[in-house]
Image (cartoon, rainbow, N blue to C red):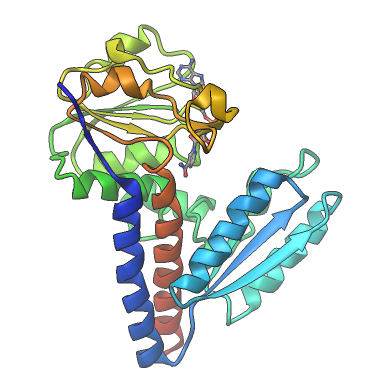
Length: 293
Ligand code: NAP
């Protein structure tokens, strides 16, 4: 079998184009402009690139970007104060603290300070709780992006065996909850899972989010399964066999021979994350406008 490629870049471009129209309509109706604030602490080059991409994407769909930067040595209280200022600013619909923060800071305690209505990363305890209870709230962007890839690929989730490798708060846990909400039968694997390959080989839908280059080989995959590669590790372009240097958790060449559909790295899940960050920002702006009406 030769798997079809799930083109995340094209699907994300479609989501963003539709969002651009929705943002224009929102502005016409409310007279407001959705705004996304990013907070970057320190000078980590990869984080600076991610923040720059979010800022640009935000402007492209007609939203206002707010770029807040603090020095690497900023204290917890300084970052907290910046977050509080943004929480209180009516021009800011969404607030995102870029993770990871420098080692002396506690990223999850800081994230928890973001106002839940502006938590466009969906990572505050309030939004994580709402997801777990199946109630409306802002959902984490990367798992939402994966759900959209599955929907646009026509994958039927009801009753399907879905296996998620990775149990982080950022991705694995919310991914499992979203799949469960669509009535998949979900297994979550992690570093202590026994017989990982045979657990994965049960999956109709296999989603890997570990950060170990090419660990998912053909023996992990049931023939005909749909494979989503969330992993993203930066190697040299020579090691990665591509210009970007990015490599995923899945051995793409080998798994393509077994799966029915597969996401590439780069160009699979990555572009969906920003698209759903923008969508969450519009959603937050809409809820705030309703609240103010
Ligand atoms: P993380 O917090 O480091 O979590 C990694 C997970 O993998 C943990 O649950 C860990 O298990 C599990 N794991 C580690 N080694 C394993 C092994 N040998 N077998 C099975 N499971 C193992 O990472 P994350 O934030 O979820 O991110 C995971 C990957 O996804 C990274 O490469 C990251 O860059 C990528 N990512 C990409 C996007 C995107 O936009 N494309 C967004 C988010 C994340 P334990 O819990 O037992 O330690």
